[in-house]
Length: 326
Image (spheres, rainbow, N blue to C red):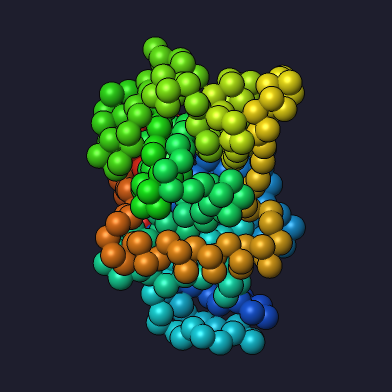
């Protein structure tokens, strides 16, 4: 088969479409013939040499895919060759085939096109596990989503609205904020010329956000704590703004607030399986009923992965950028 390889870390040009050995499904795995994958920030970090795959994972980038089951490994039940699926991966999505633990498979939701289903697994599992399983967002609470027009952001807005929460977003352009509004965001904050702490306080009559989903890390740490409501929960899922920040513990204590920080890629199989099962139970019906949908900015051939990385690094996209396998 062919896959995107990274012979040497570097810029987008480091991504090379090359012939590689076919993967073989092991115990409890299935072989998926990939139709599409999606670009995530973690793929860019891996290309740059900053985020190696977990031990035993495919060396090729790509944390999600959609496609058809081509082969069942030993011990797999409940799936059949030819089933249309999407999958959460530890790596290997930028390829024509990938071996996937059966517990990380999801059926393509009714009403979602097979290619576009590649935009779902990583973002849905990330949002559901952090915003709902860890931070326990409840109806009528306020969620603040940083990077509201990203793949993660567009899914977080929709899921929060679907459970009856109020949603605030930050983004850098009017176009992105307008798109978030169409998805259901109530409070629109342009981080280039507005202070999100002041804006969220004003919009909530001084209360603050009950849950904040943060992709920035260090840069926003102290301001996020300021923006939290009493008993608020800050869920950190990214480090785009650095890895070391200063924390005002007195403010955190005074608000009886909590901070969680999680990643998905390196979690044990049992934890990923539990998250995928929860997503199938709670989110898949929303997709089938049309309350939630994947947001796709564009589709590019997988052979043009370098261009797709440039698009994501420039942050001009809204939602996900897909790579379509030949």
